[in-house]
Image (cartoon, rainbow, N blue to C red; front, top):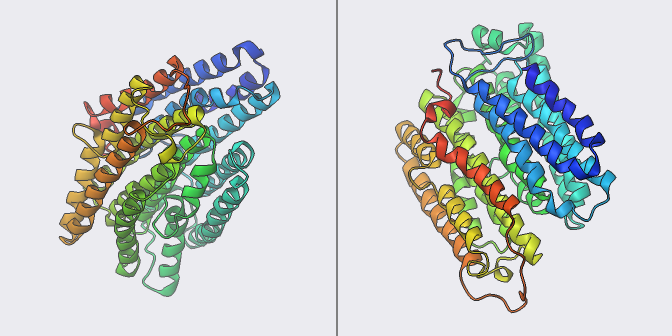
Length: 459
């Protein structure tokens, strides 16, 4: 574990001390090396925990997410190059350092075996994200977006801290493997109910559950491209991961806790998909689509069967890559037309034909076309939900239909139609952007060949 965390921390002096000419080259290559090293975590073992140390251990649920977070750091650095072009050098260094600072916290949050350390790193990821949004966002509204993000997260996570302390007083340890063995039965009393609710609530806001999701579109719309990629691909996964970790501790949940979350998650998937159909803002559309996909993950996490957990895992990984890629594409459009409004960025296919190919690929993976891992995940989750209750097929079916329709709507709006009269000249797409899209899409095509790597099933 340390052989990834220490090089990641040493990226900071690299970013701060590199000569100006090699700043981007050094940080990108170094972080790609770390990403390549992190692939060793995917090696299957027979033990429940790999690389176990006192504080960290990697099991089947956390290893794919860890590799994803290492993989996305170089991609975020590559995506941010263009919009930092005009900034003075110290500011570039600070930006890259902020991106790097999030990384050790995310790695710790995904790999820790101690609930207290998990809480600390879960909360610590908030600060660099906040700095990214409120300093490098595009519009003055970024301040209100930052306040939304901060207060939603804080209000929901203070009860989590109290419940973690309560667990510690009751059981005497916060070590996850030990807790899983002792089965802390949160009794059916009000205390048990409320502590179960508090444990889930922080992750529900992070994931986000429909109804607690209002901070997400705001934050996404205002964030710079690296902030959007970070939010969509990694921070939402912290929520899903926390739900999967904590529901295992709570034993069978009482129905009073189950049903509201399940219904909200599925209803939210339907609602946010229909909100997507009438969005004018490209980034906001992609953000709402994230809410609907994470709704399925929450629903799967609440059922707590092997199948549903495996479906949730695969969906989290494939959604991380897909939505990150969509945000990158939206950003390439934004950098050329300086507008996120769909009506003003139409008809780009004849102008940027190769970008149109990437748009098509990203949109097809987003609407879960076979043979992508997205399809495998959505089918798995739908089957488990159907097995749990036959009525859910109505909700999930309509949600899938709506997902396909808003994805196609997004593709047609950006690529087809008349070219708006205000677009007179447009820059060509660069090699860097094509490389960025390739690095997003190659893992998705490769993972379908061996989905056991990310399915969360001990191999």
